[in-house]
Length: 324
Image (cartoon, rainbow, N blue to C red; front, side, top):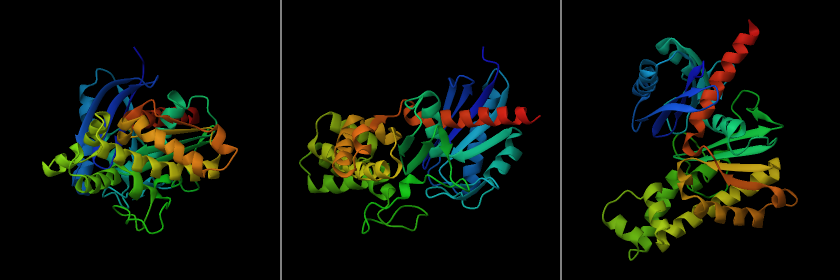
Protein backbone atom coordinates (compact mmCIF):
# COMPACT_ATOMS: atom_id res chain seq x y z
CA UNK A 1 0.00 0.00 0.00
CA UNK A 2 1.20 3.54 -0.68
CA UNK A 3 2.64 5.16 2.44
CA UNK A 4 1.21 8.63 1.87
CA UNK A 5 -2.27 9.89 1.16
CA UNK A 6 -3.48 13.39 0.51
CA UNK A 7 -6.86 14.84 -0.38
CA UNK A 8 -7.37 16.79 -3.57
CA UNK A 9 -10.35 19.14 -3.75
CA UNK A 10 -11.59 20.74 -6.96
CA UNK A 11 -14.07 23.53 -6.30
CA UNK A 12 -16.10 24.55 -9.34
CA UNK A 13 -18.78 27.11 -9.94
CA UNK A 14 -21.61 24.77 -8.94
CA UNK A 15 -20.09 21.65 -7.38
CA UNK A 16 -17.16 20.28 -5.41
CA UNK A 17 -15.25 17.10 -6.24
CA UNK A 18 -12.81 15.67 -3.70
CA UNK A 19 -10.78 12.50 -3.54
CA UNK A 20 -8.20 10.59 -1.53
CA UNK A 21 -5.10 10.34 -3.70
CA UNK A 22 -1.80 8.49 -3.26
CA UNK A 23 1.75 9.39 -4.25
CA UNK A 24 1.23 7.88 -7.72
CA UNK A 25 -1.77 10.21 -8.20
CA UNK A 26 -4.17 7.29 -8.10
CA UNK A 27 -7.61 8.17 -6.71
CA UNK A 28 -8.84 5.84 -3.94
CA UNK A 29 -12.14 7.45 -3.00
CA UNK A 30 -14.30 10.20 -4.45
CA UNK A 31 -17.14 12.36 -3.21
CA UNK A 32 -19.12 15.24 -4.70
CA UNK A 33 -21.11 18.07 -3.21
CA UNK A 34 -23.45 20.64 -4.76
CA UNK A 35 -22.71 24.26 -3.96
CA UNK A 36 -25.43 26.03 -5.91
CA UNK A 37 -26.67 29.25 -4.33
CA UNK A 38 -24.55 29.09 -1.18
CA UNK A 39 -23.23 32.18 0.56
CA UNK A 40 -19.66 32.34 1.89
CA UNK A 41 -20.23 30.74 5.34
CA UNK A 42 -22.31 27.90 3.87
CA UNK A 43 -19.76 27.36 1.12
CA UNK A 44 -16.88 27.09 3.59
CA UNK A 45 -18.94 24.70 5.72
CA UNK A 46 -19.65 22.47 2.71
CA UNK A 47 -15.99 22.36 1.71
CA UNK A 48 -14.72 21.60 5.21
CA UNK A 49 -17.40 18.95 5.76
CA UNK A 50 -16.50 17.13 2.54
CA UNK A 51 -12.82 17.01 3.46
CA UNK A 52 -13.55 15.90 7.01
CA UNK A 53 -15.74 13.07 5.72
CA UNK A 54 -12.85 11.77 3.64
CA UNK A 55 -10.46 12.07 6.59
CA UNK A 56 -12.85 10.17 8.85
CA UNK A 57 -13.51 7.33 6.39
CA UNK A 58 -10.01 6.73 5.03
CA UNK A 59 -8.18 3.72 6.56
CA UNK A 60 -4.87 5.51 6.61
CA UNK A 61 -3.32 8.80 7.61
CA UNK A 62 -4.06 11.90 5.55
CA UNK A 63 -0.98 14.12 5.41
CA UNK A 64 -2.36 17.21 3.67
CA UNK A 65 -5.11 18.65 1.54
CA UNK A 66 -4.80 20.61 -1.69
CA UNK A 67 -7.53 22.94 -2.92
CA UNK A 68 -8.11 24.17 -6.44
CA UNK A 69 -10.46 27.15 -6.40
CA UNK A 70 -11.83 29.19 -9.32
CA UNK A 71 -10.39 32.41 -8.00
CA UNK A 72 -7.70 34.99 -8.52
CA UNK A 73 -5.23 34.19 -5.76
CA UNK A 74 -2.64 36.42 -4.14
CA UNK A 75 0.07 33.88 -3.32
CA UNK A 76 1.79 36.37 -1.02
CA UNK A 77 -1.04 36.00 1.48
CA UNK A 78 -2.94 32.90 0.34
CA UNK A 79 -6.03 35.05 -0.15
CA UNK A 80 -8.81 34.38 -2.63
CA UNK A 81 -9.01 37.90 -4.02
CA UNK A 82 -12.04 37.44 -6.24
CA UNK A 83 -13.91 34.44 -7.66
CA UNK A 84 -16.12 35.12 -10.65
CA UNK A 85 -18.65 32.38 -9.95
CA UNK A 86 -18.42 31.89 -6.17
CA UNK A 87 -18.70 34.13 -3.06
CA UNK A 88 -14.97 33.99 -2.28
CA UNK A 89 -13.92 37.64 -2.44
CA UNK A 90 -11.10 38.66 -0.06
CA UNK A 91 -11.30 35.35 1.80
CA UNK A 92 -8.23 33.98 3.62
CA UNK A 93 -9.13 30.60 2.26
CA UNK A 94 -5.99 28.63 3.09
CA UNK A 95 -5.78 29.90 6.67
CA UNK A 96 -9.49 29.29 7.29
CA UNK A 97 -9.32 25.72 6.00
CA UNK A 98 -6.18 24.98 8.03
CA UNK A 99 -7.95 26.19 11.18
CA UNK A 100 -11.02 24.06 10.50
CA UNK A 101 -9.28 20.87 9.38
CA UNK A 102 -6.06 20.73 11.40
CA UNK A 103 -4.19 19.61 8.27
CA UNK A 104 -1.45 21.06 6.11
CA UNK A 105 -3.33 23.08 3.48
CA UNK A 106 -2.16 24.18 0.03
CA UNK A 107 -4.23 26.37 -2.29
CA UNK A 108 -3.98 27.35 -5.95
CA UNK A 109 -6.16 28.31 -8.87
CA UNK A 110 -8.20 25.42 -10.28
CA UNK A 111 -6.98 25.92 -13.84
CA UNK A 112 -3.36 25.88 -12.71
CA UNK A 113 -3.93 22.58 -10.96
CA UNK A 114 -5.73 20.97 -13.89
CA UNK A 115 -2.73 21.91 -16.03
CA UNK A 116 -0.39 20.46 -13.40
CA UNK A 117 -2.31 17.16 -13.38
CA UNK A 118 -2.26 16.78 -17.16
CA UNK A 119 1.42 17.71 -17.33
CA UNK A 120 2.42 15.44 -14.46
CA UNK A 121 0.43 12.32 -15.34
CA UNK A 122 -2.01 12.97 -18.22
CA UNK A 123 -2.06 14.17 -21.81
CA UNK A 124 0.87 16.56 -21.35
CA UNK A 125 3.54 14.25 -19.92
CA UNK A 126 6.93 15.28 -21.31
CA UNK A 127 5.61 18.45 -22.98
CA UNK A 128 7.55 21.65 -22.30
CA UNK A 129 4.98 24.19 -23.54
CA UNK A 130 1.35 23.35 -22.85
CA UNK A 131 -1.92 25.17 -22.35
CA UNK A 132 -4.95 23.83 -20.45
CA UNK A 133 -8.51 25.01 -20.99
CA UNK A 134 -11.22 23.80 -18.61
CA UNK A 135 -14.75 24.28 -19.91
CA UNK A 136 -17.28 24.23 -17.09
CA UNK A 137 -19.64 26.73 -15.47
CA UNK A 138 -16.82 29.16 -16.24
CA UNK A 139 -13.56 28.64 -18.10
CA UNK A 140 -10.38 27.79 -16.25
CA UNK A 141 -6.91 28.17 -17.73
CA UNK A 142 -3.43 26.91 -16.96
CA UNK A 143 -0.02 27.30 -18.57
CA UNK A 144 3.05 25.10 -18.57
CA UNK A 145 5.94 27.17 -19.95
CA UNK A 146 9.41 25.69 -20.18
CA UNK A 147 8.20 22.64 -18.28
CA UNK A 148 7.06 24.68 -15.27
CA UNK A 149 3.65 25.83 -14.11
CA UNK A 150 3.34 29.56 -14.83
CA UNK A 151 1.40 31.58 -12.25
CA UNK A 152 2.42 35.16 -12.99
CA UNK A 153 3.96 37.67 -10.60
CA UNK A 154 1.37 37.49 -7.80
CA UNK A 155 -0.08 34.10 -8.65
CA UNK A 156 -3.07 35.49 -10.53
CA UNK A 157 -1.86 34.77 -14.08
CA UNK A 158 -3.29 32.49 -16.78
CA UNK A 159 -6.89 33.68 -16.44
CA UNK A 160 -7.45 32.50 -19.99
CA UNK A 161 -11.23 32.52 -19.70
CA UNK A 162 -11.28 36.29 -19.43
CA UNK A 163 -9.66 37.16 -22.72
CA UNK A 164 -12.17 39.16 -24.77
CA UNK A 165 -13.08 37.50 -28.06
CA UNK A 166 -16.10 39.69 -28.91
CA UNK A 167 -15.88 43.41 -28.09
CA UNK A 168 -19.69 43.73 -28.21
CA UNK A 169 -20.45 40.31 -26.77
CA UNK A 170 -22.66 39.53 -23.77
CA UNK A 171 -21.70 40.66 -20.31
CA UNK A 172 -19.48 38.16 -18.60
CA UNK A 173 -20.92 36.28 -15.68
CA UNK A 174 -20.55 36.61 -11.94
CA UNK A 175 -18.03 39.14 -10.68
CA UNK A 176 -16.30 39.79 -14.01
CA UNK A 177 -16.95 43.38 -15.17
CA UNK A 178 -16.17 42.70 -18.85
CA UNK A 179 -18.16 41.94 -21.98
CA UNK A 180 -17.48 39.29 -24.60
CA UNK A 181 -15.00 37.26 -22.57
CA UNK A 182 -14.14 33.78 -23.79
CA UNK A 183 -15.98 32.56 -20.68
CA UNK A 184 -19.09 34.53 -21.61
CA UNK A 185 -19.03 33.05 -25.11
CA UNK A 186 -18.00 29.40 -24.76
CA UNK A 187 -18.42 28.14 -21.18
CA UNK A 188 -21.03 25.64 -20.06
CA UNK A 189 -23.14 28.63 -19.03
CA UNK A 190 -22.86 30.07 -22.54
CA UNK A 191 -23.69 26.68 -24.06
CA UNK A 192 -26.92 26.53 -22.05
CA UNK A 193 -27.83 30.07 -23.11
CA UNK A 194 -27.26 29.32 -26.79
CA UNK A 195 -29.12 26.03 -26.48
CA UNK A 196 -32.21 27.85 -25.25
CA UNK A 197 -31.95 30.38 -28.06
CA UNK A 198 -31.50 27.80 -30.82
CA UNK A 199 -34.20 25.56 -29.35
CA UNK A 200 -36.68 28.44 -29.43
CA UNK A 201 -35.79 29.11 -33.08
CA UNK A 202 -36.10 25.43 -34.06
CA UNK A 203 -39.14 24.04 -32.21
CA UNK A 204 -39.42 21.09 -34.61
CA UNK A 205 -36.19 19.53 -33.31
CA UNK A 206 -35.63 17.34 -30.27
CA UNK A 207 -33.87 20.24 -28.61
CA UNK A 208 -36.86 22.47 -29.33
CA UNK A 209 -39.26 19.90 -27.91
CA UNK A 210 -37.08 19.58 -24.81
CA UNK A 211 -37.43 23.33 -24.27
CA UNK A 212 -41.22 23.11 -24.57
CA UNK A 213 -41.21 20.21 -22.08
CA UNK A 214 -39.37 22.36 -19.54
CA UNK A 215 -36.18 20.31 -19.47
CA UNK A 216 -32.87 21.92 -18.49
CA UNK A 217 -30.98 22.60 -21.70
CA UNK A 218 -27.52 22.20 -20.25
CA UNK A 219 -24.40 20.43 -21.47
CA UNK A 220 -25.34 16.81 -20.67
CA UNK A 221 -28.70 16.96 -22.46
CA UNK A 222 -27.34 18.91 -25.43
CA UNK A 223 -24.52 16.40 -25.78
CA UNK A 224 -26.91 13.45 -25.54
CA UNK A 225 -29.19 14.87 -28.23
CA UNK A 226 -26.22 15.72 -30.44
CA UNK A 227 -24.97 12.13 -30.15
CA UNK A 228 -28.43 11.06 -31.34
CA UNK A 229 -28.07 13.33 -34.38
CA UNK A 230 -30.41 16.17 -33.43
CA UNK A 231 -29.49 19.05 -35.78
CA UNK A 232 -30.24 21.82 -33.26
CA UNK A 233 -28.06 20.23 -30.59
CA UNK A 234 -25.29 19.72 -33.13
CA UNK A 235 -25.59 23.38 -34.11
CA UNK A 236 -25.11 24.43 -30.47
CA UNK A 237 -21.91 22.40 -30.14
CA UNK A 238 -20.60 23.64 -33.47
CA UNK A 239 -21.17 27.27 -32.42
CA UNK A 240 -19.45 26.80 -29.05
CA UNK A 241 -16.67 24.88 -30.79
CA UNK A 242 -16.08 27.71 -33.25
CA UNK A 243 -15.85 30.22 -30.41
CA UNK A 244 -13.41 27.93 -28.65
CA UNK A 245 -11.38 27.89 -31.86
CA UNK A 246 -11.23 31.70 -31.94
CA UNK A 247 -9.75 31.72 -28.44
CA UNK A 248 -7.32 28.92 -29.28
CA UNK A 249 -6.06 30.85 -32.30
CA UNK A 250 -5.18 33.75 -30.02
CA UNK A 251 -3.40 31.49 -27.56
CA UNK A 252 -1.49 29.77 -30.36
CA UNK A 253 -0.28 33.15 -31.64
CA UNK A 254 0.69 34.38 -28.18
CA UNK A 255 2.25 31.29 -26.59
CA UNK A 256 3.26 29.00 -29.48
CA UNK A 257 2.38 25.91 -27.42
CA UNK A 258 3.20 22.37 -28.44
CA UNK A 259 -0.04 21.10 -26.97
CA UNK A 260 -3.45 22.45 -25.96
CA UNK A 261 -5.44 20.23 -23.60
CA UNK A 262 -9.18 20.85 -23.31
CA UNK A 263 -11.05 19.46 -20.31
CA UNK A 264 -13.95 20.22 -18.01
CA UNK A 265 -17.52 19.00 -17.94
CA UNK A 266 -18.41 20.46 -21.35
CA UNK A 267 -15.83 18.15 -22.92
CA UNK A 268 -18.24 15.25 -22.61
CA UNK A 269 -19.08 16.42 -26.14
CA UNK A 270 -15.62 15.30 -27.28
CA UNK A 271 -14.89 15.65 -30.96
CA UNK A 272 -18.26 17.26 -31.64
CA UNK A 273 -16.72 20.26 -29.89
CA UNK A 274 -13.04 19.85 -30.72
CA UNK A 275 -13.42 19.29 -34.47
CA UNK A 276 -14.99 22.72 -35.19
CA UNK A 277 -12.57 24.30 -32.68
CA UNK A 278 -9.53 22.92 -34.52
CA UNK A 279 -10.94 24.01 -37.88
CA UNK A 280 -11.56 27.57 -36.65
CA UNK A 281 -8.14 27.75 -35.03
CA UNK A 282 -6.45 26.68 -38.26
CA UNK A 283 -8.35 29.38 -40.18
CA UNK A 284 -7.25 32.12 -37.79
CA UNK A 285 -3.87 31.27 -36.25
CA UNK A 286 -0.52 32.14 -37.79
CA UNK A 287 2.13 29.76 -39.09
CA UNK A 288 4.32 28.06 -38.05
CA UNK A 289 2.59 27.66 -34.67
CA UNK A 290 -0.80 26.62 -36.07
CA UNK A 291 0.74 23.84 -38.17
CA UNK A 292 2.37 21.97 -35.30
CA UNK A 293 0.17 22.50 -32.25
CA UNK A 294 -1.95 19.56 -31.13
CA UNK A 295 -5.40 20.06 -29.57
CA UNK A 296 -6.53 17.07 -27.50
CA UNK A 297 -9.02 16.14 -24.80
CA UNK A 298 -7.81 16.00 -21.22
CA UNK A 299 -7.01 12.49 -20.04
CA UNK A 300 -8.26 13.17 -16.53
CA UNK A 301 -11.43 14.76 -17.85
CA UNK A 302 -13.42 16.50 -15.15
CA UNK A 303 -11.13 15.03 -12.45
CA UNK A 304 -8.03 16.94 -13.57
CA UNK A 305 -8.53 19.63 -10.93
CA UNK A 306 -8.84 17.06 -8.15
CA UNK A 307 -5.68 15.23 -9.22
CA UNK A 308 -3.81 18.50 -9.63
CA UNK A 309 -4.86 19.63 -6.16
CA UNK A 310 -3.46 16.38 -4.77
CA UNK A 311 -0.22 16.94 -6.69
CA UNK A 312 -0.02 20.43 -5.18
CA UNK A 313 -0.37 18.95 -1.69
CA UNK A 314 2.32 16.33 -2.35
CA UNK A 315 4.66 18.98 -3.75
CA UNK A 316 4.00 21.20 -0.75
CA UNK A 317 4.80 18.41 1.70
CA UNK A 318 8.01 17.59 -0.17
CA UNK A 319 9.08 21.25 -0.12
CA UNK A 320 8.47 21.48 3.63
CA UNK A 321 10.50 18.36 4.28
CA UNK A 322 13.36 19.66 2.15
CA UNK A 323 13.48 22.84 4.27
CA UNK A 324 13.94 20.92 7.51
